[in-house]
Image (cartoon, rainbow, N blue to C red):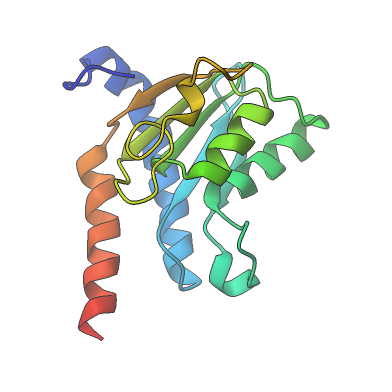
Length: 162
């Protein structure tokens, strides 16, 4: 996990991909879902998978941004083993997504906003760094956290007003 104050080097490294994940989150808004977006970077740093929440439009409880991005990356790579990839997501993954990330063997998980109600990468649980797990990706938190949180806060504020 990154230090409380994310280093400038980590921010420079991961901010461009997080901005792409934020673009994916905007697509979730377009389909009426919670604005969470994810991109997956291959070992060369290029995007090999994308996803945004689609639970409402697909009526699928597993249609979280991370799961859809994993499916896209696996299809593009033609393998479920996503060794060496970096997953960049706007919100701390839940237990289902953290499990999927570990099972896919991703190398690094980068997230923006924390999720104190359902976060499984440090907030409520810490599934990815549990020493009992056979695969433990590196976790970097807080990349563009304010921007990621603002998108979510705006969405939920708008829902409460209606």
